[in-house]
Image (cartoon, rainbow, N blue to C red):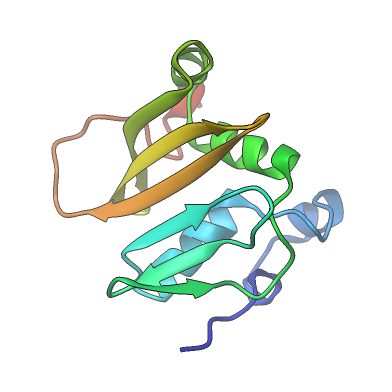
Length: 137
């Protein structure tokens, strides 16, 4: 299976103008996860994103994730309280909602950055902020 590079996803002009081409955007990655009906997404600094479809890993065509980009991807998922919790414990797990889907997010400290795994959940009770509710937005 060949997945589209992230650059082929629909990205707003503003995002295209402000995001360096070597950085990934969490909304684009989640949109890719949805469009490919993927089970999970793995994000590790030094490697390109990996989409898991029916348990099979499929690396996304593109550059490796930088430590700075991994941190910004994590901040896109976690509210302020969860970021503080992660910094004190070096790992965290929570539920994130995106366009009606729920994902179990696992963040783990990796050197000076964070590795992230998102796994799709079946219908679960509302236990975390979604993309509209995070930080009171």
